[in-house]
Amino acid sequence: MRLVAEGRVDLDAPVRRYVPELKLADERAAAQITVLNLLNHTAGMDWNLVDDGKGDGSLAGLVAKLPQLPLVAPPGARASYSQAGYDLAGRVIEKVTGLPFEQAMASLVLEPVGLSDTVYGLAEVMVRKFAVGYNRGEDGELRPARPWGAFKEGARADNPGGGLASSVSDLLRWARFQLGDGDGVLPASALHRMREQTVTLRASTLGDGLGICWFLNDLDGILGIGHGGSGNGQFAELLIVPERNFAVVCLANAGPNGPSTSPS
Image (cartoon, rainbow, N blue to C red; front, side, top):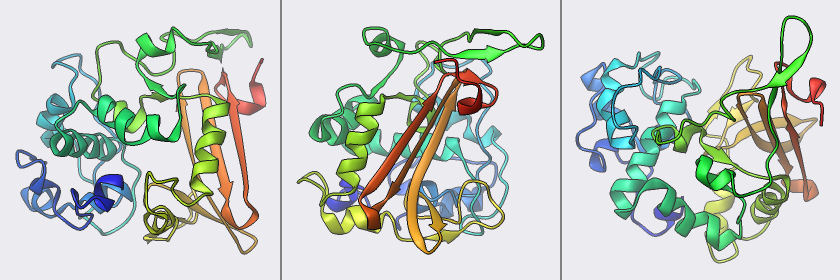
């Protein structure tokens, strides 16, 4: 959205404007998918590619494998959560900025907002305080989850869709940013546009609709925006209620049921 505000990305432009090499299982879909389709999960792409251990682990390598990904609907027809779609959006960012995705995110968002403990990759996690994840076995015992989180060292291809690690403090700082006017990082109009519904979700546990990136929930007539995430033995949930200037973060480090089984 910052690149959109700067005029470097057009939400309604086809992804191929920025990633001309994009190919999918269906050529028509590959030509039609827009940047907005990626950000509100209406691209019609399945959830994600199964890691076959081949390739160089880069976003460019992931894009080369996208013809293997099933398509579940025509672009724009309905919302279907796609982590692969966000990975493709990460490749758009790399192409537009000329930087590796992680560096682009640091310079565009993380550093300006002050999110010093929001990072990508094991190398950055390991030099900070972090919680070990646990999974409960069939015998009822909790055991450390391996590998840590969802990370595979050297594999960056899923960083845009699921590779971020953060802390309660940083998530609350991010919430304060969202409740503000953009702090010179993003125009307030662009920030608030992300809360506006772009597509309805029907009978979904994820929410009642999607804005741009955010899941939207009707909380007895009051708008709630949020997003969750999970890794191996790790769970996170962020909910923001702009009308009440309120936000809450929940983290847990035990699976399979998240907060209800957390040991610490």
